[in-house]
Image (cartoon, rainbow, N blue to C red):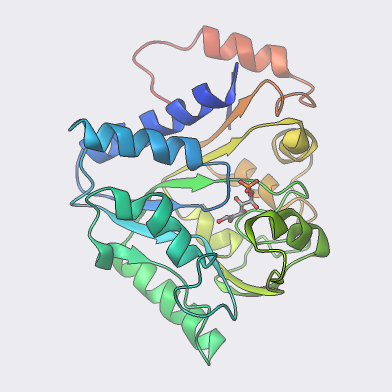
Length: 259
Ligand code: F6R
């Protein structure tokens, strides 16, 4: 795992945008996208580069990590809608090239199985964008999730529901259930890039990167992946025991070696 500590959230966003731009420019690919606030700066930067003619997504597919269960199709907080509004609908990625678990399906296990099938059809995921929950969740794999899990229904913790209440109206409730890629599903991507900013993520980042590999911190599963990059600002790096070592490694990184 490579840990990249940068001065601020803006540099974190540009670094994730750089990784995605380089991969997209090298040929058609499938991008694994996260929702939530962490990747928004990178998506805005990618939209800017698209508008400036620097990158095109017309030959790409996008696969989402997760979706709420029970929101009406088109609900503005459904992740299918969020990713369209925040990113894919603002670039030239074809609308029918966006794959999202169907959280409004009557038969949720069948929807999860169908998502896995389609994901393999359009994959492999070249770059998987990830955020991290303050409790160490990855996708919506909450603490206790099997490290070998596949896409399935999960129950959100009250902490995650409270964290995400900021996206919902005061008179709305955050759904309790979700469909999420499993941890084993996420590990199939070729390159995992986790971004985190702010002090609220510092303990979770340290547990994921330096703690034991454990279902109690689902993001620690990154330790199993041969190409995982964790990009954080100084605030989110605040609990890392070996921050100086990571800074030194980054400073000494050869120019020819990309993230
Ligand atoms: C979103 C997702 C979640 C978020 C995480 C962090 O698709 O899978 O794991 O990445 O909850 O959320 P933010 O970025 O809003 O702090």
